[in-house]
Each structure stands twice: as C-alpha cells, then as structure tokens.
Picture (tube, rainbow, N blue to C red):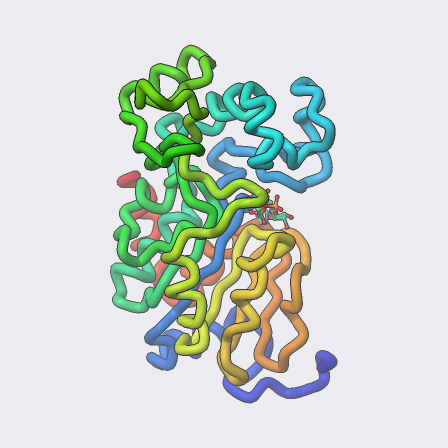
Length: 280
Ligand code: APR
C-alpha cells in the first residue's frame, strides 16, 4: 500500500488520528509489543544500535560472534562472558522510563489487553504493570535453574554469584550442571506463556509497537497477527518489520519517550502520565 491509500479505520495516518480513535472509545483492547529500545533511556543499552548497542560493545569478551553471549551451546562451553554481562544487566539498578509508565497508564485506564515484551530487565513490572498483563517472551532474570536437571536455584545465591561474577552450578549433589537465569537463549524454546497468547493480537483493536528492531522470530511475527483494519502504531527510531505496509499503519519514527509524551498529550493524558512516572 502506498501513502495515498486512505486508511479504513483512522481519519489519517497520524498521531492525532490515533488519539482521536482512542478518545472516541474505539480502542478498548490495546496490545503493546516492546523491545530494548524502550529501556535505553533508563541506561540499559539495546542490542543492535550501531555504536551504543550491546552487540557492538562485546569485543572485550572476545566472543566468536556477538550473539554467542546468549547462545546456549556457547554458554555450556564458556558461561563466563554471559555472567560478566549479567552483572551489568541485572535488574534492580534501573528506573523505568516514561514509556514503561505509559503502558501502565493504558492498564490503569482499562485499555491494555496484553503487553508482549522481549526485555529481560523487568522494568515493566517495576512500572506497576500487573504480571498477568505481561508476556515476557524472552524470559527474565526473575528465576534461574540448572540447565541440565532444571532444579531451581535460590535467588539469594544467584544475586551473590552475579555480584561476585562467579558461575553458579547446580545445588543437587549428583549434578554439576551450570545454572542460568530463565532468559531465552538462542537455541532455546520461548516460554509457554508466549505460545498461549500469541494469537491475542488478532482480538486487539489497536496495536502499539515500540523500541524493537523486530529482527528476532517468533516475536517479530506478532504485529502480523493483528486483524486487517486494526490500526498498528510504530514508535521507533527506525522503520522495522512490515510496519507501514498496511493502510492503517501509523509510523512515528522518533524516540519512544518523546512519542509516548506526544500521544499522551494528544489524548489529554500528559499530566496523568508524568504523575505516574514521577512515582516510579
Ligand atoms: N526510542 C525509540 N527507538 C529506539 C530507542 C529509543 N530511545 N533506542 C533504540 N531504539 C530502536 C532501535 O533503532 C532498534 O530499532 O529500538 C530497536 C532496538 O532493537 P534491538 O537492539 O534489536 O533490540 P530488540 O528488538 O529488543 O532485540 C530483540 O534480540 O538479542 C535478542 O533476545 C534479544 O530480546 C532481544 C532480541
């Protein structure tokens, strides 16, 4: 579709038209899909941004290739690069961004059907988005277990290992397996929660994609699950995936914190949003 094709559901392919659609009460079930770009302003690097991204800065770990740090096969052979990185990524040292608070605001207004996130920083929870509204598609640091016998590993021992940059091994006497946070590594299955909810975007009446390159499947296929006629809004520094290919796609190619502030302002929610964020 080219930009001359008129949208079906929105008046135009603009932020104002999206705000009008929301204010008219036509967006009751919003799905949000996010990636590392919504946490960069919290101080957590994303993965693929050219200079600041994690993958451009892992040279010091002398990996065969950047994504090896999250590869289960490589981890089995050499878990140290991951545990070196884990200390920097471990939740607890970062504050949610206003983008996280915007998602909580949608929930507070009863408009959030589901948030699908690829992030492992747990900032959505810290921004008070309820756990049952979040699908952590790539897992998180919330739990850890032995990669061989799956025995759970105590949180306090994990925190100690992360702080000391030591590699924790299984608590079972008979097993010497490596312990790994339940983050989905390349080569591992996504959690059941993802597959149980992956068709939900087809029930949404608005989809908002923020801060992701949509380069990792199966997560990247989620926006395509939206029905025709469901407006899909991209708030991202660059155009990604198939966003923009449909008549009702709205592309806000900009910083996500600025984008959510503009959308909140257009909806008459900016003060409420700033207030929510101030409480994080
Ligand atoms: N505002 C808007 N967009 C931003 C911002 C920002 N402040 N910062 C970064 N971005 C954009 C980048 O331009 C890029 O398109 O966010 C996207 C981040 O993409 P990635 O770094 O690839 O992160 P993500 O999409 O979450 O990666 C997916 O890859 O390595 C795996 O499992 C890992 O979950 C991760 C997955």
